[in-house]
Length: 618
Image 1: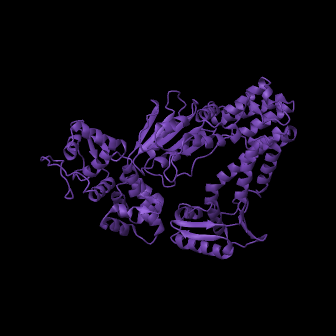
Image 2: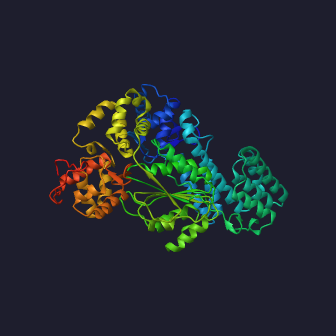
């Protein structure tokens, strides 16, 4: 079976077209195919079908569309219900988009290894799969969401193909094609630069300079900006008759200033669709991230308790700022799904490959890879996102040195990288932000029907982002559950943490991981202090509970603050720190105290101090 989305949506069996229903049926098929055998949530599919105003019968209609697809496509493909949505597996069937990606990747590899003829052939074959505008007969909502990404991928392959053809000496033939492309896409500076090179190599230096001046005038008049650095470099090279612009048979693509322009990587993971409640923090980060002030910080670290939305904020900011970093966005997860630390050398290997380096060009040693990486991005605007950093030794080799580069690091602990790092600390969401996040996940209509229960759910979750994400996912999987019923169920449960797990998401497990990373005295202190029947407590109170001197108690509780196991505020009267548990962390701590009551030393006798009240379990 063959599926096609690079044009009108089609499914073919043995070359014969399978009759599908109208635009919405084809939208469901295209959406499942674009999910690439991942789970497509119901709420996202609903948005792709009806936008922000789905009908009351949307769930039933989606079920009908999926059932009909199963009937039309037969046993060669599988469409399974996987809460909170559907997953489609196409087995040995062919998808034109997947073939396009395979050919494109192979072409990029050929281009990096100077196999220009092979690269040109692969790129042309990839482009030939496009039968017109992609997603031609789907809803406007799917087209608005996915078409820009697909079109950008096609344009990038077209640019690569022209690079290969320029390296093969086809500049005379390319002038006509590039003139049309510059006219159709006047803002794509790479086409303009390629046309300038083709004209220059065809002994038309004046025409090449005129193409540049036309582009600069358009940008100044319409946007008030200058051309990018790459186009400026080509202009300068033409003015000085730089030998790097001349075609060398069998040589590399055009070099400007003696170096080949590296690729523009786009490695960001998918944007978080349930991001909410952090608008002020996001805007503040974006202001600093996009500032061209030389005194602005170049590195930002986002810290917070487990599941507080550090990655969601980093990725959302990176997408919002990507236009300010036209030379690429790099992303590296510094911890594997199994919890293993990824060494910097391995991250640099993926970065260098994404920047266009072949494996033969990448050195083995870490120091040499660091030097090569920083040299490649020194004069470029590149944004680097380093997710789940463990310590500064893991991060420092991955920091670019370019003045125009920026780095966002997410970490559970503050990293002592260098003085210019700006730290953003995430606490839980407020009540309003929590309801907004729940609405993003389960739908505004569902929350709007019972806003009081929605607020109660946020309160029961302590406005904790991961807890809300887990709860929202469970609600999506159970559309027949009311918010009031779920709130009652959580309130009546013996442990809220038992209710806050779904699939691979488990809040107790996330807290447990942070708890296990603590030193033994801090673990014992966390369990004992959770038994305090007080909203807040001081270091002096902690000393009494732990039966240690006050300075030792302060050191222990501050280590818990550093690990985001405790929260801290300042007493408005004394100016001294006051410590408190997030309510779900307190619940976890009391579980530890109960399960380890035999190994914990007994609580000492305590004087009658207002904030020293222990629960009966002690």
